[in-house]
Image 1 (cartoon, rainbow, N blue to C red):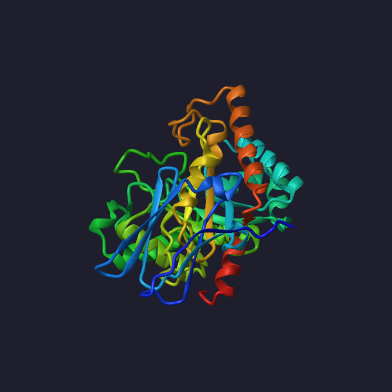
Image 2 (cartoon, rainbow, N blue to C red):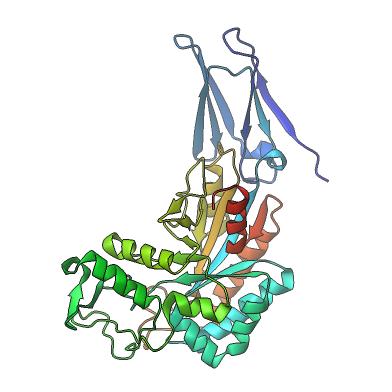
Length: 384
């Protein structure tokens, strides 16, 4: 068991201050030892307002504190600070290359399962259908593993994601802005009940081309729910404006649980479990989208250090897209002729990502969870 480390950096007694101790929790193991993490501390006494100003300097980051009731300034080790919860989320959308995704997802699951590490997947209904038909054993292993959480991912050609246009009552491809909002909301709900059936003929960059659904089949959010026999936890979308409002309402109507209302680092300081349209917002205080050649650990921990004054647990996300493991950077997965990474670079990407996961899993200051756990945390705190 680690010894609790109290570092009494300075003790000052001023008559104007009440006998009260202020504890400042240092978030994240920025260096191997917490003493090494703190570069310097500056104290200033403003006689005019009887306030003490303190600045903590960690690398390039500076955080200031001001209080009129501080008698002693005490820094505590990470062992005494609130926990850091980290979740790994893989966005899966490339329905053009299900064979590549099968290899990638299979390798990820083998690595995570062997180490008992939790992970979360976000699927579009279109890619999930391809995987279910071609690689049912892959989906079965996800469905039966207690380590895996399932989420729903919105990507092209869903009308909320690309172009924001649907067929009007006369069958004409029309932008949302020219349609009644109630009509848009009702139609978007149908896109979450039924599948898009014109994937092969849909033209992404043609404003006269609209996605079409087939009401005789199950698709969208409903399909993902059916396959995994449970509601996806969080729904992710890049939509804005009416498209976003319509999609939030569609997911609420279908009994959705949560939504990705923001991506990285925007959770409320006091309450990470906010809601939008009665859907739980996925909490994120810090995060990183994995890239080869970037010091992902340093990048992540620099964000964690910026939350030095948070008194609640932190929620940290590591994001990666399935197609990043095999497509050249900047290539659009929707195009059949998109350039693939060389075999060597594909291995480098996989090795780098798994290496990052292992480093974070071995960090005693972090606990890896999945999105199901987030919902349980929200219930525990009475927010959902």
